[in-house]
Length: 145
Image 1: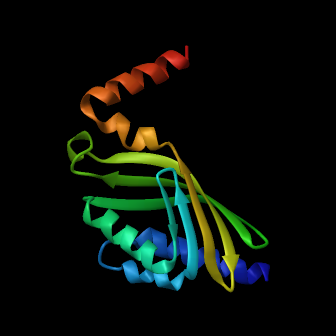
Image 2: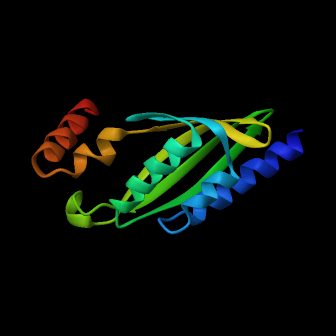
């Protein structure tokens, strides 16, 4: 079973490393029809809702690329540490940004049934805004003193 789960995670990584607005149907190759997807801003249930989410997401960004830095598979669970490189036209004047995060995955029937992303939403969104971003960066700097 562990070897099979390693194969599922390798396929997941392969899909995410090539994912873009033109190949979102690849999500069907790795996700269970009853997928539960969570991140700091969303809770999505079902493959159709996830397809819609990704379609909307990718239609609003210039690009988004993932580099998987580490993957650990333990039974039916996996944890990935990744770096996302992206550009959004409304954040930092569309300049390239990077964001570190990690993902918890649960495998059922050789598909991902549960996907939860952990990342700093403030760093991703708010720090890219002109006035609010400076304030948040200043607060983080002060917290580190």
